[in-house]
Structures are given as structure tokens and as C-alpha cells.
Image (tube, rainbow, N blue to C red):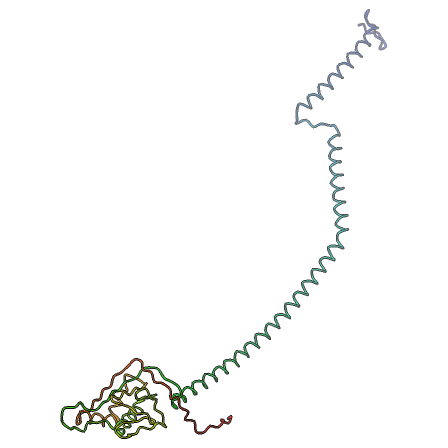
Amino acid sequence: MTHLPGGLREDGPDASEAPHIGLLTQVMTQTLDQDYAAVARRRDPQVPDPSPRWRIGALSVLLVFGLMLGVSALTTDQEQPLIAAERAELIEQIEAGQSKLADQQQQLAALSDEVARMQSRLAAELTDDRLLSNRLTALGVAAGTIGVTGPGVVVTVDDARYTGEESGGVVLDTDLQLLVNGLWEAGAEAVSIDDHRLTSLTSIRLAGEAITVDYRSLAPPYVIEATGDPDTMPARLLETRGGQFWLDLKTNYGVQFEIVAKSQVSIPADLRDHLLYAAPRRAT
């Protein structure tokens, strides 16, 4: 190529074709370079893709999320009155239940007080009944209208054994009277002779050669039973006038006299009606 004055140039024989060849080469080169660069960017994850498709995807996600939030907010706004009504109804039910519970607790307290008062009255009545029953029992024992079973003593007496000589050792009605009185003094609660209950109205007498208790004849040996403390009654009996008298009869006249403590003796009731007078007791 020849440079001419004035900025003109003169090319060789192929100068007319050079611009066409250079333009074609440039187009082909630039296009290939761009394709290679795009492939290289897809293969290399560190090279960001200038494509706007990720922006479209992100925008789509945001739109969907916003739509969901809107629907949720709309649903919440629509359900809010229903929730408030249900809450108010629930509160009303709770308050009604609490009021009913308070009423029931008051009724329970009142019933508990009534039960306590009834128990107190019942206890007082039972106490009165027990006291009355105990008093009636004591009076029945003293009057002989109630049979008695319990610990006590058994006293057996008999005439002196026959030895061919007159000893005077015969049991008399007065001897039995002294013995029974001695048992009362020794703490006897109930006394019987040959299963005949003795009371304050019982008579012990001699009818001919036989001793009678309330006009019922007895025969020796005579068995006297008495309820009381078996540990103290024998000694206390011997300290009484009747006990001393019977010790003298045994020593001097050979009369048989034996005292035995028992864990249980049974004394029947006097079935005869000795009631002479009765009147209601005035309340004090």
C-alpha cells in the first residue's frame, strides 16, 4: 500500500476488495467471541448471568407471597367478628359457671353446718339415751328386775356334818340373813340363793324346819352367788359382821362355809312384779 500526499492512499491490485474482507472478518470474529463468552459464563458459576430471568422469578415469588398475605389478612378480618362473638360467649359461660359454683359452695357450707348441728343434737340425744339406759340398768339391777352376768363369788354353806353327836351346827334363816347382808356390805351388785334373786323386798324366813325365800322352800346345801369384784369381795366379806359370824359358826359348830372367786356368775331376774308406786319425774 502506497501513502499519497493529502491523506490519500493507493492500494495494490486487491485494494478494492479489502474493505469487504475486513468487514466480514470483523462480523464473524465478534459473533464468535460473544458466543464463546456466553458459554463460558454458563459453565463458570462465579460469573453472574446478566439475564433478567431471575428478576422475573423473584418478582413472581413476591407477588404470590403478597397475594397469600392479602388473602390471609382478608380471611382474618372476616373471621374477627366471629372470634369475638365466640370469645364473649365463652366468657359468659365461664362467669355463669363461676356463679353457679359459688352458689353450690354456699349451699354445701349451709348443708355442712346443718349436718354438724344434727350430729351435735344426735350426740346429745345418744348421750342422754345412754345415760338414761345406764340409769335404768342400774335401777333394774338394784330392783332385781334385770338379770346380771359377770365376775363375782360363790358362797356355799351347809349344816355341820353328822358325827353322832349334837353339835348345834344347823344353818338357820337368820344365819343366811347375816351372810347376805355381809355380801351387800362387801360390794355385791346382785345376790341370789339357790337361783332365787334377792331384793330389798325379799324375805328369808324359817317355816317349820325349812328355810324359805319369798315363801319358796330351800334345802341344804345353800348356794349364794353374788356379782362384784372377785379379787376383793372374799376378804371384805370376812371383815363384815356377817363374815365374822360365819367364821365363828365354822370354828365352833362345824358349819360348812366356803367362798370361791369366779370369773363369771349368772344371777336371774326376779320375775315377780314388786312395783308398789310410780310417778313421772318432773323436768328440772
